[in-house]
Amino acid sequence: MADVVVVRAGADDRDDARDVRLRALAESPGAFASSLEREQVFDDAEWLHRVTTNAWFLVRADGATVGLACGVPEPDDDAGRHLVGMWVEPAFRGRGLADLLVAAVMAWARRARAEYVALWVVDGNDRALGFYERLGFEATGERQPLPGNPDVMEARMRLLL
View 1 (cartoon, rainbow, N blue to C red):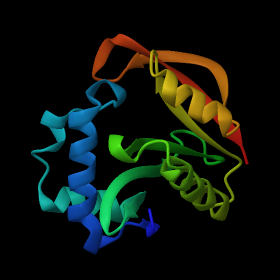
View 2 (tube, one colour):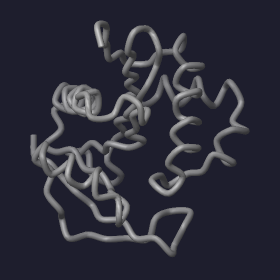
View 3 (cartoon, helix red, strand yellow):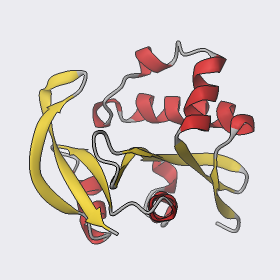
View 4 (cartoon, rainbow, N blue to C red):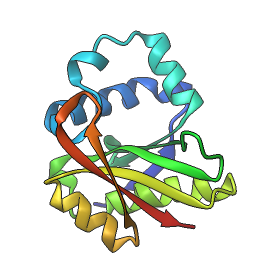
């Protein structure tokens, strides 16, 4: 890939953010706490709100948006930030794009003076688990049912900054 760039999405990127998020939900429905059916009915105002209130990062390869990751404040803990919505188009996996996305979220968290970044990994998503472990994330021992699908469990991981 000759031209790869990670950008923080803004108002003008909401269509790209929506398109890649819907592709992620369609391709990996069991990996997320939301669903394609839920998010495909969001209107333009909702997508504008999403990309302008949280830290959405898009990775573009040769001009096409092929992945995303989002950073949000950690619920109930001002010291942390949370990585959500991480996804890379299958044809682009294994090329380091996920590393770039996580690095962007971590840089955003550091600028906010966060002490850690946390995330949840769905049981059985061994590729994601191995990826996050390689980056230094460690299991916290916390587990919960996947929001939206209580039959599936997920485990919390955290990386100290």
